[in-house]
Length: 403
Image 1 (cartoon, rainbow, N blue to C red):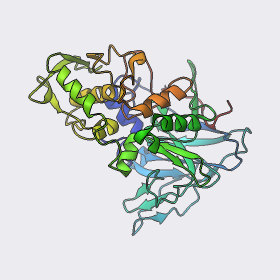
Image 2 (tube, helix red, strand yellow):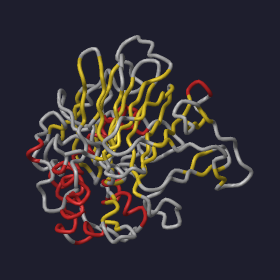
Image 3 (tube, rainbow, N blue to C red):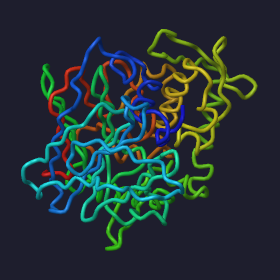
Image 4 (cartoon, helix red, strand yellow):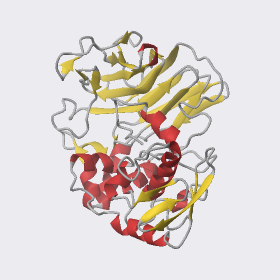
C-alpha cells in the first residue's frame, strides 16, 4: 500500500478500505448500480466555542481527469488551480468557507463528485493552501515547522463521493486535533459517528504524557502553551527518525519466533479466501502467495514501508491484516487474523501502539481511524468511524463538540 498521506495518489479512505477490507461497499467496489446526484448537500455545523471558523473542501475531480479542485468561498463553485511556474504559489481565489457563529445554524454547501476528498476546518484563522507545478496542492502540515499553518488549530475528515456512493470517515492517522463528527441521512436511517467529546484533545494529550517516553513527545503545544494537537507515531517518526527507535523489536522478534512453529491463518475476506503461513529462514511465508521479511517499528506504525509494500492485491490484503495485528499487538494471542480478533485483547502488550489505544478509549463510540489499516476487522464489526450510502441524503459535519 502507498501511504494514506499520499496526496498525489488515490483517495486516502479508498486506499485503506480497498486494501484493508475489500468488500462490497468499499470505495471503488460499488454497493450496487447507482447514479448519485451531481452534488451532495453538506451541512457544516460549528460547535467549537469560537465564532471564527472556516471550512475548505479539497479533492480530485473525476469529471476533469482527476485534476485537483477546491470549492470557492461560496461553498458551491468548483475551482481548479492552474499550474504555477514555480512551487509555493498562493491560490488566486478565496476558498475559505466561513461558518456561522458557534451553536448557530449550519452552513450548507454543495459538494460535487470527488475522490480523495477532505473537508478541512480551522479555528481563529484561515488556512493557507499553496500550489506547486503540476498542479499539486500543498496541504497544511502538522510537522513542517516552516508551514504557514503550523500554529493554527485545524483538522479534517475524509470523503469520496462518486456516481455509486458516498463514503466518509473521521481520521486520526496523522493527528488528533479538532473534534469532528459525522451524521448522514439515508433511506435506511441516520448513520452517526460521534467523534471526540468536548475536551478530547486534552484527554488524549494527558494520557500520552502519562504514558511517558517518546509517547509524551507526540503532544504539540500551541503559542498559548496549551495542547494544539497530538501527532500519531508515524507522523512523529517522519519528522524525527530518532523517535521509537527499536520500540517494538522485542514484540516483533517474539512473533517471528512464535510462528516458526505455529501456523498463522489470515482470512483475506475476499475471493482469495484463507491462507496459512509460517516463518522459515527469517521470512513469514505464505506458500503460493508470497512472504514478509521481519518488519521494523517505523514500518509497523506507518503500514507503508517494507515489508508492507507489496506487489499484488492478494499480498496487499495480507499486508493490511498483518500490519493491523502488529499495531494492536494481538499476534501472540490470536493465530487467526482477523477472524478471531477481540477488541478486549487490543493494545495489551507493554510495547504497543498506545496512541491508537488512547484515541479509541477517548472516543465515546470507539470509532475512528487511529492507524492506516484500522479498518481491518472481523466481518460485522466496525472500528473505522465511517458513514456510507449509495443513496446519501444530507451529510452533517460538526466541528467541535457540544457535549
